[in-house]
Figure 1: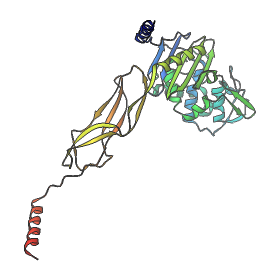
Figure 2 (figure 1 turned 180 degrees about the horizontal axis):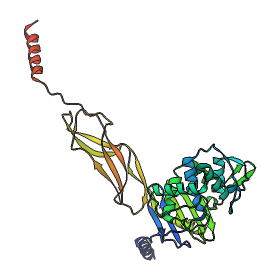
Figure 3 (figure 1 turned 60 degrees about the vertical axis):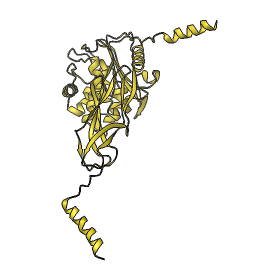
Figure 4 (figure 1 turned 45 degrees about the vertical axis):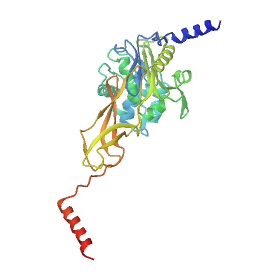
Length: 368
């Protein structure tokens, strides 16, 4: 019996570990993107042009944060007060700050807030939409075009899951944007605004970002979540079961990723030849700790860039080269390489030094 138990345990440990299966999602187009390095963890028709409904407002908020001042007073015009669709119920002539309107834009998906913001920043919604498209192009998103600030249907208003994820990544660099989209609710005057994004309460580590829906676009959703120092962005376009899609996609993404320390500050980084020093070489160390969020299957390496040698003297902490960090042959950054210790210049006596030495000895011997 004992032998049978040992055999079964042996077979269990020898069985190959099944790789995490790709999630099946309802979305027509979807992607999971790692935030810091842009690694694509999962994709389905991710470069297909599709309408994005109110996830448009991610770019609306980004441009407003870059071009406006949060404390600005915005007077609500007739166009904003009368716009169709989801609303924070603004009244014509009402005055709010730009920051208050951004909460209405991102939490309750206020189309009225989008128009008010766009007219304040650019004078008209059409002009603001042109700014949004230009900003997308600056971010390398050439398959994205905006015709309005709210996401209402227009044949010339579209993006891709990949590019919407990249736009979201840029927006998440802004701390005010992060604060707004991660808020469950907020009180603005006599209004209580509640966030439409259910993932904030349904998914562990969720930090935003934006929901959307029109008949033309279907259900659209952009989410972001953080776990173990890793941040993932998920996008679905035309997804009937988007909440479930995102939970499965994010779970899959986190199962595929890891936080990897590539260099440690003060860690050994090699040696460099020293000319004219009291030592022939100096030991080098990494000047910074460099960690990456990478796929567990990724290959990481440090390419050392150094001169052929250095002339003494060398001070401890002097930058003598760089270490380039690569993941799967893609450069992710670099760290300085520092001298771990000082190397003094070697003293080489001159002919005059020899004469002075001989004279001093002669004086010592014969003059007393």
